[in-house]
Length: 292
Image 1 (cartoon, rainbow, N blue to C red):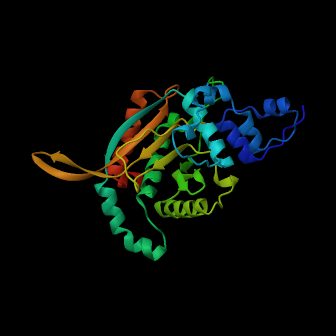
Image 2 (spheres, rainbow, N blue to C red):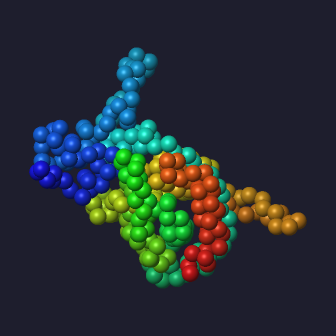
Image 3 (cartoon, helix red, strand yellow):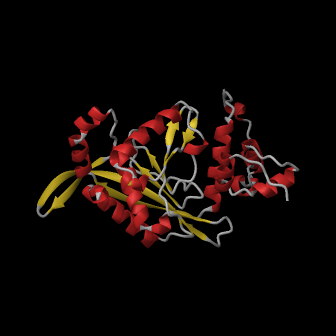
């Protein structure tokens, strides 16, 4: 059999889209597969269903303009559509007490300025999630396309969703469990900056253990992020809110961070998710535990 020629990024995307590159190449009569071929080869029935009834002449109801979808956006849409159609996902909502993290981050501000590093709350979330993935190996896994084999990973790579003018990009922080807070913060700044400039390469994308999608700087109280296959879960973060927490008989205003964990129910059940989030919230409430 002739080996199919495809770049690492195309192979990674094919895995996320559940497309068999060898079969696609045979169907097309080709030996080379590019990103455009994946877009054409996406399973339209599963991802799109019957959408004939969506074909409406909207101009009959008022003025309209048309804007073509970029190639990047179309590939992402096919992947998300297939994921939402094929994965039985559930979202677990929780809140974390972040008083200690905010106090710690404030105390580190002079050092951050001296280092020239922007220390955001996201760096703590990446570090906490990396620790939680080591403690709960089934979350740091992928399910084979046929659903018969669970692939457990002995590495922890964290994807960070970045909103850019040309679409959502998810660069990956490699070996996050082996990096300190300052290195993680530096990596976040570098990847986010290069994503905005569209300078992330194939080596910066794919292979994540889990992705973080943060809307904290924009707003919202909760949302349901879509699992990004072949990952088994995704962590959503929204804006911190002040809640009244009773400590004995004393009410105290406490900054609480809403967290939303969507997960693939074929592998992860509700009790697993609840334990995972309890552990993660415990790390965020006491950041000393994630520094050990």
